[in-house]
Image (cartoon, rainbow, N blue to C red; front, side):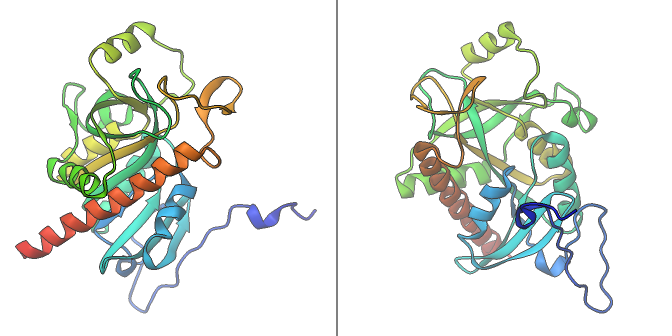
Length: 276
């Protein structure tokens, strides 16, 4: 039977190898020449495409096993976007395979829910570190090891936001693997008291992999909910969470975060070039 809405069904794109080339990784099939050392790792595939559309001469370079990779240039600097899907395990696989092919500088451009009362939909949080609530990172470093962001890359995000007049909230965030897991009210209250800004699912893993492999990793999030601002129409009937495709405040914050991330990556790349 023909598949209805076939134009929206998942399709893989495996690039054609040149003579003498071969794919080295199991999940991500990409030519090394098409991959930058500077990689953005949004979870959302739609956000990944939106990021790619802000690059010059961007093109899809791989789409396999649910990882969509685009490469292009920003201010003349070659960059790659790899949308990972949700959660620490998928993020770890992407970073591991990209790292084996030469990537060493990652910015997660994600979404999160607010923890603090003064935050709401459309606000932007940049994590200086993340409370480790997931399980993937525990396979790399013990639970007592801090999941902290790379200072240089994070500072570049703050500087880029300052130049653009974009307000950021910087501080500790929290991440876990179980989106629908039972709430631990005591833990939530404690994290809120400690000033944790936002909750998401990937940055603990990303930061720990950065430490483990000596990669530079930073993370910023546009908030899709929080007490400070009414969502008006929730994306789900069981929770107050903004629709990422239609909520104006969310989309405005998302675009601002993407531009901050692009500027920050360009700044760090130029610093790298100056040291060579």
